[in-house]
Image (cartoon, rainbow, N blue to C red; front, side):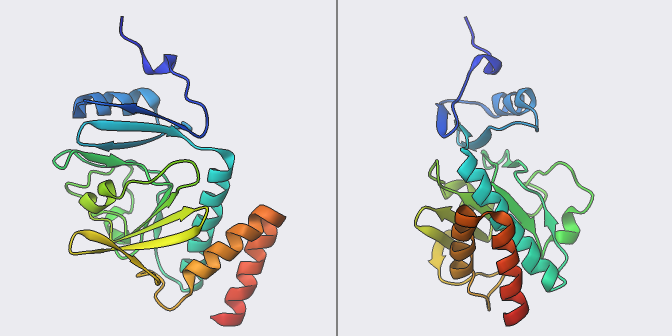
Length: 212
């Protein structure tokens, strides 16, 4: 007897790993799960991971994404924020759903698009992963060619820049090269956990007014 996905219950903070999943099966799973769901997917060469994040994961995702938007808007930079849009390339047998992603340099190429195929569309300029409940694997993003990947874990923010097809950890951001982004993200995510999002974002806006 075959199980259907709707019969499975994955607890927040846990993952389900499926082996030997074909591309067509992945497409069917994406269709069955739909876009309005708590689960997030990562697929690489037949291996599919389905994860349901914890609330603390979602809080960190939201405030870091908000900080990126505020910075871009403060500098009058056009961008598209595409959240956890499924990024996939059948030819490379890769698919991943970041916590947040941003088209900045490539913003004009994706305006008006609701579906993305990275065999023809450019990858996002910046992807963000929150690693509080699961460990992000770099392979998907490297193969898909995402130039900058931020990973936020309990020890803080790590910036990875794509160089010659491999990620190299960096102290500075390609997107915000003149801003101490690691220090700022660590400070205001921690403040949001202690005093709430509103106070943390206001403090971040105050920092911007004083320093930009």
